[in-house]
Length: 120
Image (cartoon, rainbow, N blue to C red; front, side):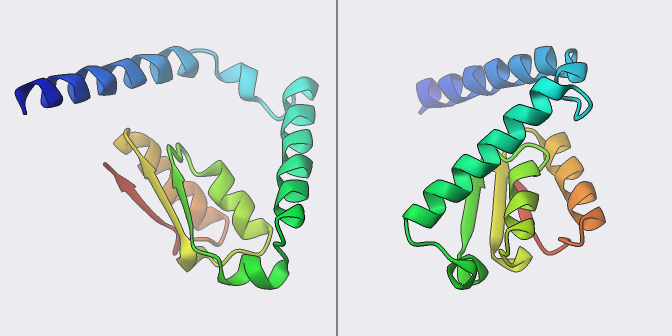
């Protein structure tokens, strides 16, 4: 078990260092950057296209239970709410407790306060 615990701790530190580097480049993720906005809109279209091909509909979305591992600030969970998912059926897990706190704050603002998120 000590090796497992050490490996888990090392992986957590690796992920945290990647997030820290990413946080220093926050302007890259601005919705006012045309390239970033185009990327998100293109990704949204593709996700909905794939879900539609898989047989998803408004009815399926409304009853689906969705888990996002590595949910960060909950952006995609809020997108699922926008697409018709019920907030109480959405679950997010992230390694960073500050990301979960941000997700909870932002989800409340998006009328999705029942989205459940955990730091694991």
